[in-house]
Image (cartoon, rainbow, N blue to C red):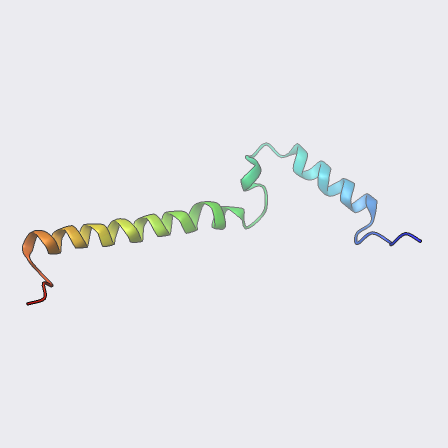
Length: 67
C-alpha cells in the first residue's frame, strides 16, 4: 500500500507554477523571506559596527580601563 500525499498534486503544481513564474531572486520568493535574508543581517551589521566604533572610541580616550 502506498501512503496518500500530504497535499494534493493539483495544489502542488499550482504552487510550483506560482514560484517558477516569479521574477525575483530565489531567496526572496516567500512572503517573510525579506525579513530573514535582509533585515536580520542588516541589524547584526549595524549592531556590530556600533560596538566596534564604541570600542575604538573608548580605547582612544582611555575610557573603561581597569586599574
